[in-house]
Length: 361
Image 1 (spheres, rainbow, N blue to C red):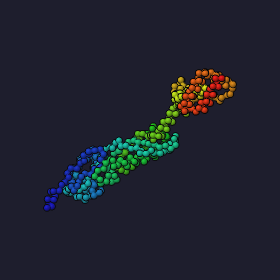
Image 2: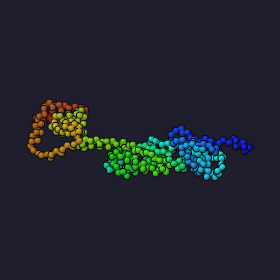
Image 3: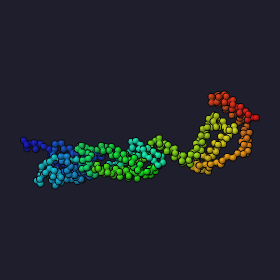
Image 4: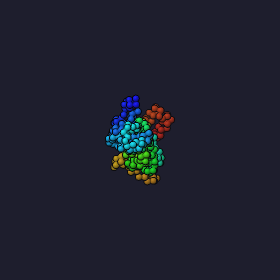
């Protein structure tokens, strides 16, 4: 009866793992109740390692190659099992395979903006993302600290821990660097190297090696980026004075399109001529014929302090007298049209009309 049980018993004489994907990091050979045939073969392919585990203890570790399983090739297991030199019987042991292939293009990024202190902007919130690559180097350490006795352990199960640990060190890297946000784009390689140096110890404690870590982008949240873009635009135009001149020049065509705007109200009255002159000066600064739009790069010179004399008063009087009767009548007609549209009240129209009629002498 014992002989029949022995004959019916199945033995394993070939142990190997054919990887079918690039995500599995650890895989347990299916043993069930089978035993390993003494003298059987173990095949470990390139980018693999194999580990024999006896009653929860890691025994022998194998790199790539083909091995005949004997007491000579299994020294640790032989010691743990107390085998003698004549041992040739089938034996039991768990066998785990580990993939040492490099896991590339693994992505990390900040799910929420990270707040840091910036030299230029004070407190700012930053986003960052990039990629990293790693591979398994110590299957014994990985087995005891990460994968354990699970039948299969994939990259996805580990990646969340790695990615969150990287993100957790981002604020430290940015804060310790002291680099202003404006200069961060030119220091992404340095940030990646510094971040990798911080992460190396943790990766090594898992039995894996961090091969590369890159910072691909550092940016502001959309609302802060819009504010920065506007500030950059102002600086490119030569500062706030040039920017104001440009805005004024842009607004003149819009005002001219509105009945009662600068073109309508300022065309025939002395006050209108004064406002028009100011707008012309603004346009002259914004649209400098010597430098095109680029003329805004240099702020306009501060005008000299005004002096009061009879000459400017006489000039203004002459300009007002030069207003024709047709222009005044046209202005009155436009004002009357604004009354019909509800823009001016009848009282306001009558007052303006009286002022204009006085100019007719």
